[in-house]
Image (cartoon, rainbow, N blue to C red; front, top):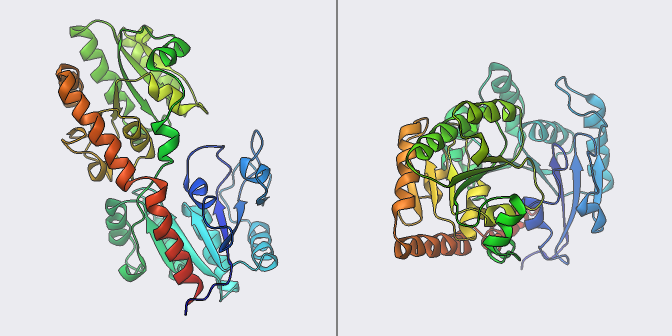
Length: 377
């Protein structure tokens, strides 16, 4: 007979990222009679109110520092103390640094089950990272890569990880949030200052090398040479943002490229788009932004990087080789030339794929079973 005790789960992340669709939103929808969650962060509180704390969950931040590179024994001690006081059964860690501290805490708490959620590729890219992984990954009980490509990368670069400990948990999204946006496309464009009759490409993500935004801007500039009234929307911030602004201006298309910065109304920004583009060149696990766009029925253009081909194929869009602005431009142009019936087909297929495979409801049962099985060991 299955043990029905309440399972106490602590989620350990780098910092609070805001009220955005994430694994945390999946967890808060689980059976409260069976699961109890607390949320821990390595770094300071950041700006704004924590929506999880507001909802009544226990939330703890272990340091007020913005970031730290050297080991912080006080953080480890605080984590161990909280895990003991809250009688945690399962510690669910996101990203490398939380996994490192979670594994160390697990060495002092032998009954604790530690889960490492792996969100992207190239997480063992340096000698120091390889050494730290070698020292601590043996203490991880379960690895959750977000795509088959991430699983392959994890196993190939960490020989100490046994495949029997690895379970792929595809990224999922709040399907209802993105499939039922409360404004029209025209209203979204008015909000962003984009002409109602424009052809609008768009993307969502941080401005980093891995996103390949320079190739996207170069591709868009080629399209603008041949077509009128095309616009490109970027949602997000990052270190390369100013460089990309200057790149667009250098191509002479600065007036039609919109840099919106970080937004809390991502779904309203996506609503203004006609075609979603993901130009990533490396380290892309399973992009949640593409899933969000697909849930809203947007046909997509993407590169064959990481987990993107696990989401995107000819039934929902076009896949091209990464790092090739000419190929990206050709795919974007080909999408414009598709007739309304073909666009409708791609739109319906994209929406259906997310609903049936990449929605929170699909992942919830799998993750619940993982928590239960780990807690019983």
